[in-house]
Length: 524
Ligand code: MSP
Image (tube, rainbow, N blue to C red; front, side, top):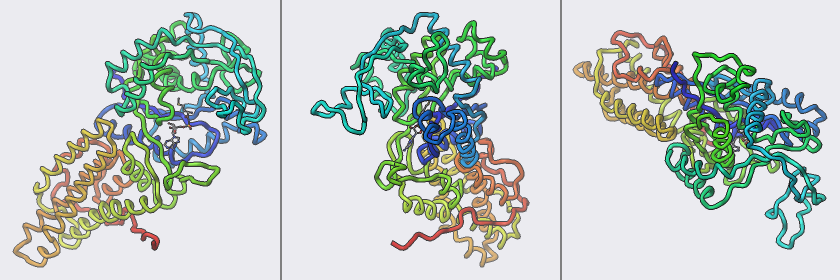
């Protein structure tokens, strides 16, 4: 039984419409999933929705719906987004799924039985309007509370807490000895800096039902529901357990059999990569490994932490209307233009800035004029000069293709998706330059140059074929169109097909169609 490459995204809060940030993260994960599959690994790619908690309860109430009815309605839109984005996810988890809730409760039961939790009273300042406890940081410098909090009362509340004290040292050691555990490196340093300089406070893992009822009931104390983050993080583990992965069922001990029958052929846990945004790093880098360690389960291998998008230099915000609607962009420009732009523009790590002009500029220069034009020229010339039939094989560009394939693969294995696209475009640009240098349109005028023209045409179409394979993880639809135009049966989804010489001489190609219709930039 070989372990599958198990990859997840953050599960999105269901309290609004999907935006650029959500779509970006899902596309990153999809490119990783597809590239691993292309390279021959078995992959399991999970995404889904985070449906409990105060925000969802509030949003449902505002619309006059029960939380479950509200979630069911919105879930349709989010599931539709996975299709719109062309995601190749293997499962979609909702934290209201019975399969998920059972695992959360099994974990809580086990950790409680083993003494990881205690109940305590907390006295604090509570904002009735926002239904949240405030901290000293929320106070104005003069000691008053901002009017946005509404009435603020001092309140005593009992809750259950998770003891974190005994976990701080081993966690520091683990992160120090596993450099790959948090990428990029500066995010790892951030976590280590925090863990070395501050004592971890115990984590409150409940909310009293009287204050918040929309959550997973605490199995050992009916007055409480589970804190939404304790619930949400478990999604990564609950799906493998529900599917019968022994690696997830075994740590659940006595509760295992009630979750699912073991499926001896399935091995998912531990996760290989959790793709998340920078704002939820602490939950994933501190609380999640501690929860797993307490449970006796192996820790995930890598947290891959991306930055945040802005638009026109300002925060994305529904209230100010500063938003990018991925669905609208895709409707206007096509899915692959969106997927290409977000991955090419913003490497995994820093923050990025969306501008409509930047999007259009890359569309026109890199997709329409770069890739699209290359394929179009290659196919048109082959049709015009050789009746659409692939000539004798030649390997003039083979060595450069090998270098580009190697570099792209290295970037992909290192989760550097932007770097991979840069490598692929060195090949696009090289092939376009090759046309300028070899001037096939001049060669065609001179019968003495027929053999040379054959060579040039072969190198061009064969490079287009390899490009289709390299591009498949990023822009699978376009990659398949290239294969179709080359009249190749089968899919460009296997990395093995990057080997030079795949186009057999004598092969008839198909009809050229523009991949990315040119769209003019609006006047400045
Ligand atoms: N529900 C939690 C995650 C639980 S994971 C066990 C949550 N949801 S969220 O909807 O607020 O965010 C989902 C993901 O989208 C997070 O990884 C977050 O960083 C990402 N993004 C939200 N806004 C973003 C941008 N503006 N830019 C890029 N990613 C952003 O947090």
